[in-house]
Image (tube, rainbow, N blue to C red; front, side, top):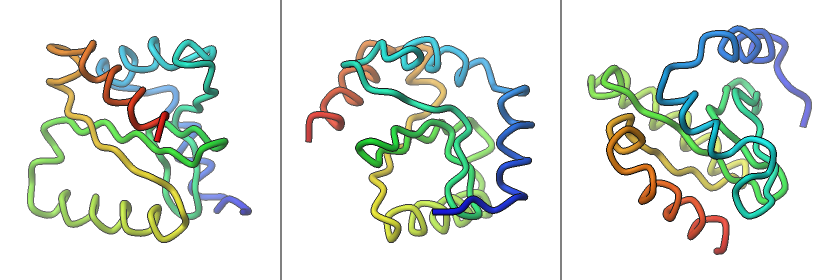
Length: 116
């Protein structure tokens, strides 16, 4: 699938401006640390940019901070998730608070998802 040039630009910008929760999760996912799966951060998929993606198994991990609690953002997130799912990607959403307070549980959830 060819990437939208605008999403590629946004992905590059986002890599430079990761949130602290994304940085913490990236430290777990980078360099094949999790079950030897290669994840990419801020990966363009069509018109969207996934926070983390493992193309080999078509798994997307989205990190949701407090801004995702608004009605408008939730509607936006639903459109993104629907696009990804109709493009054969599995999507899991993880809250910032879970990354900060229960990283072991987040890791176990991702491992379960990889194993499916």
